[in-house]
Image 1 (tube, rainbow, N blue to C red):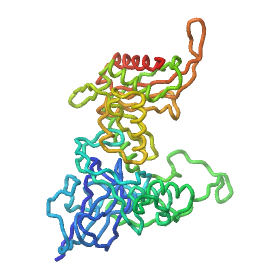
Image 2 (image 1 turned 180 degrees about the horizontal axis):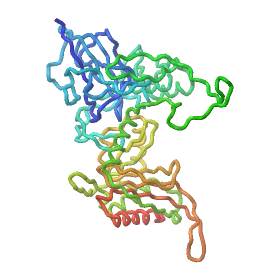
Image 3 (image 1 turned 45 degrees about the vertical axis):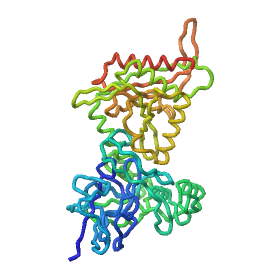
Length: 462
């Protein structure tokens, strides 16, 4: 009797409950060998390749590109070929989940589906042999995970060599990879190649599929595109139509959150449930600044000064055990906004960097976030956060404190304000500052003194 095996989606090294299918490297009926690439999956941070756990024939695949699969549920089913190499039972595959990566399941659990969402990634392979880590990063906080991380490699599918994330971006931008001119080594299509083709329209693909939803346990089925109905203020009888109150009907297309945004939603909800936030606001007066200065570097320096003056806000807090940890160093989480969602990479040892070092480090972190090559270890472990939302708009805000940190500084939009001075009035350049802190971990007086130290440093000429 031929043996069959169900393969469950393993923990892909992020500690997250699900992942999104980017692309299958096989189809039902294909034969695959042990450890050959089976599928690429998007997690909250990266697109990773999942290898086949067996050698044999593919009997069933759970869902299609864009489907969200719950960790620990069936990803694929195989008919084992005993004549080919097989992994011994219980042997570690490098990924983990509670039920075991080869245990049988009651069925697939596809919890969301559409045409893939927004994905961005680098066009070169990630470094291998990274040291083990105790805590993996997420886009907006820290979550536990396994120590095993798989590196991405360019895979040839349909005669085209490209990273899984590059294929995902091509799908999103409507680019036919087979028509893209590859500039990478050994004919690999890179991220820049796809962006260039999308910009000049030289490799347009066919019409993108419409969004679809796959019910749990149901086989994936293609959806037939339908033309959007034309809008009119008149009924078919030619009479004016009565408008409907909100909630009666929806005109938009519901969209399941995927990847980065999905994890961001979870972390924000967790922060809302676990933090007692209070916000203080004031303005940093920059009137005394001499010459052109790096605003972000000055903000970082001011936060470091405030952390040294009032260490209570440069801390972690365990609300369940009521434990507070004050940090001797300052690692600042810099909020980076992307189309995929919010990333918070850590600016390590900010208290030891000068202005040039701060700018170089931030530039590196932003570039790694942009091409999705940032190591997971750089997305966790910060001791305080900075959100420079004023780069876009807004003066004051109530930034969200993400546990275990106890404070976040928000910098608003620069403005020129009329300020009363002795003997008259002047126009000063000022920056609105918002400080949100967890009131369980520090007092209002500590927060106010922290804010004053920050404002005083920002006011210095240089």
